[in-house]
Length: 151
Image (cartoon, rainbow, N blue to C red; front, side, top):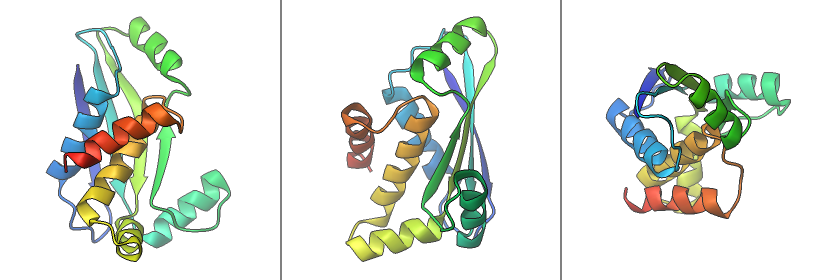
């Protein structure tokens, strides 16, 4: 199963595409998604300014504040995603979009005394897991922390 990742860095973020891709690919591999062999999946990751993520958060989530990550999954559950993959076994499935705010992630890691690289991995992994149908819960957090532990 191949994961195509489109990255659009619209901020001053120094985060490299290779890091974003490696975390996304590793998370996807450990998520347990069992798509047919020829299936391709794609995700979009955008890095935006605090002002931009605040605007998006207000428009789509009705929260008038900046945040570290917004995920916009194409499917509402793992089951729905699996059903779509079975119907489209040879094609490409768009999983959704992650919007990251590097400045917010950096500020949070500094205020909490966390290593920035690990916090970035945590946020990216968290978002990817939402795109493949995970909801907050023990299984999601275990996969997420396994990814963070390797960074």
